[in-house]
Image (cartoon, rainbow, N blue to C red; front, side, top):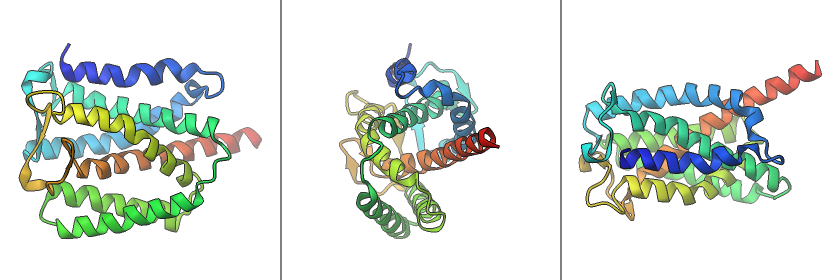
Length: 232
């Protein structure tokens, strides 16, 4: 297997095995989750394919199997199934084990930060495709779901995002060259701001946010619809 494949396997193994924990019972929501991941994942794969073609980012052939769908290695396509699954597992675990944790103050600061920083960084770097797209999308999603729709689950999303940053930094660190001579995933310096968390472009924080938030929204919407039907 390729190094990228091993990273994918390591990412999914724990969450998948623990999905049958009685208190969380994550497996019961697999259908809703799969729908949410496929809808959002398709959008991100199109984004990913376009940026790969434009050489805004790319993949080191030394660390992949060499099987492609379009211009994307099979590992990258799998990434958009595995990483959201792992993040949503964290989301459900936090809801199950910390249901009464007060998060309102943190969520207000969280939403304010990503709204203001998204617009600021996107505006200052409007000529850098990755920075501008990831940051602006993050800001707009935050405004819609937190300030306009006022979704109650946004509190849980904010808490999940914070906790999921730990495995996110590990996985993305490996992908961007923290433990290898060359990165598995490389970025064009012309389209990123420059600051990195070890080897991870700062934009990845916003990209991950923009990936996870709409998945949570669709997932929660499907769960709510199911609950309504049960009580009709």
